[in-house]
Length: 287
Image (cartoon, rainbow, N blue to C red; front, side, top):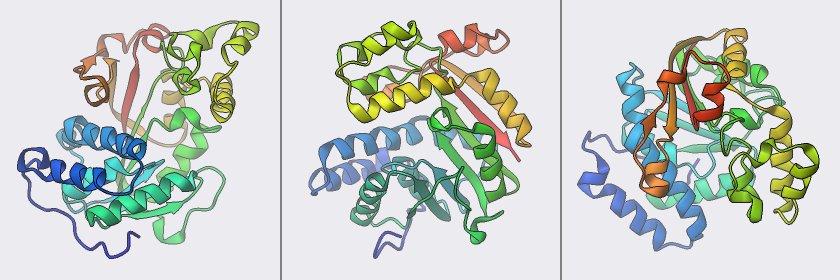
């Protein structure tokens, strides 16, 4: 838990209007936190307040007073926004300890009560005190990285109270940047659909990419998460799909690039095409 953190904001005023978000950024930018870390935190925080929190509440998911866990919390931007909306308990997990350390440092600076812990949702036993403990779980842009989506979803389901909600987003693998080639930071990183090239050409596209990200982009090519695969995994794990949202332009692009979200729900009934053209698939699941 962030040391010395003891409060969450309970005023319903949007913090961007009241000055809180500006204060948060000013405090982080004036700290010793790496500017790149602040950037990653910032677009997750903005996404929550620009879209995710309001979306969840419109769909009947209560934030205020709820117990929330985020799997793959990274720098914690989403959870900071949840704290401001009045969530009662916040837990963030990740397998990347460096990112958890950054998240803890940010929570300390912002004086927010958020607990972060290293945990692997597939291969580790979950703490007994977490079983049927949470009202809401978040899995944003994580499921496409997991070797066994069904097992991950099933294990998250164990953490939810009966009737609890799980919100999942991911870029379908067959979409223009569904292979996460942008991570490579080489000449191929800005080329859409490069991850769909034949193996020999794909291997050339990986050249001079950042080594760790070459490994991850290669893994994603093997996993190939699609909307059809996800729907099947969710059903097999015992969930009902309460809502599905597809996007031509992702909600997070507002913070990243200043672009408004553009929905693609007309693609829902068209297998294959929806994975090719939708840059994001989002699902609200109920246990």
